[in-house]
Length: 301
Image (tube, rainbow, N blue to C red; front, side, top):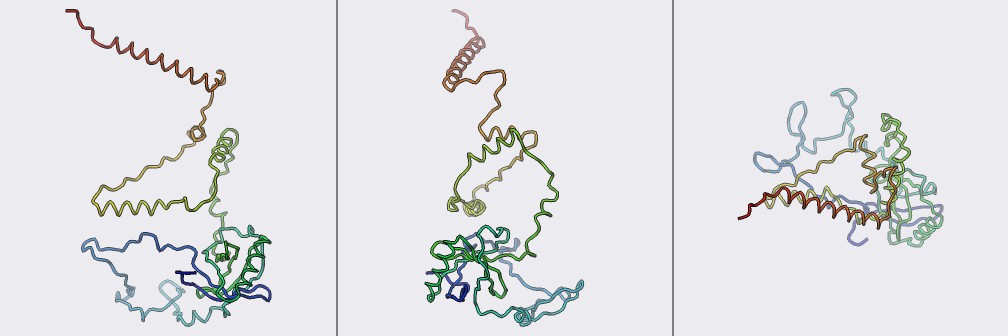
């Protein structure tokens, strides 16, 4: 890929077929606004340093190593070479272990996406895998060592190539039961449910990431610009949370509906407009009459 540097190069293997491949980062944060830490008193940038917690002396990089805390304040030293030795042997191969339906993997397990492309050699084998998966509507589960760690990868057809998404391990994903355990059991039905469904139906659309703006980044840009130009800073808008007593009214308003009275027949749009015109004229006449009465009477000369 022109202008992009491969993060990893190796092979992908399915059955007895293999092809050279390269991984490229699919998502990057390099375009985000970043800040430096500044000393308020001097305006100078602050540098990060490592201090010995006991002696309070500066510890240079070559003196630093890894450690695992076994008791409070007690550590066993782990040398970086010992860490490297624990990484499983790898022949730089993404070996496909199984093909599964694309919907089988809950996206809570998704970690980072990478574009997977053919690396010069084996492009026909790559294309055969891509087109076979697309026709069969399946994804592939593969494992290899990526960035000094054994990773499980979900591979799917994507445009002219494949997209490989690293997956979180099961122990890394927190249970949803714990997250939702304190939520009360509430069942919405009747008019409230109908209104919610109506609002949803009016907001249906298609996923287009190009239409999503990063409002936080835009706000940061405005803040930086205002500071540079010496302008007043933007004020934060207050968001009001719907109260339970006002929820039904808010749903009706969102749906563009008002509750009609049971004892009054509904008028057609034409009649409603006519009635509104008559009421407007009547209100105008009443206003003129009130103004005439309120105005001071001039005596005749």
